[in-house]
Image (cartoon, rainbow, N blue to C red):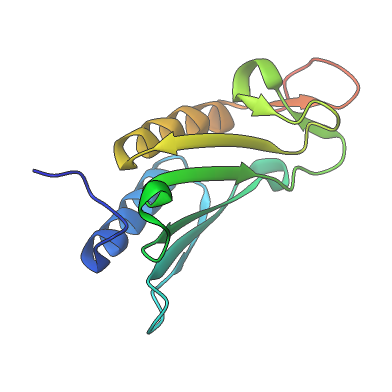
Length: 136
């Protein structure tokens, strides 16, 4: 069976539902943005503890080279909390309120999201701004 791709409308909807289902397993807040006529785009907005937010877009109108490359921009972490750079991944070290992941293909996207959701759920993704203690 071929990998799902943002190129196909049915795949975009299926991918958004799979991301939403995965996020629900980790009790994140989920908002699905269905495809509007003429847009070729479906999205999933996610919110987690400490104000953490992420939007995952499945955009079928992107150029072929970037079609199934997903850039995940984690943001919105509230004051007093930072993302743990040693646990969460590519964290902006200046403030610790943003992080970026890049996934090539839907399978890698799901693996990356599962890895991030696990550390969000267990609290190890977060530290207090002034120290190194995990925030739960």
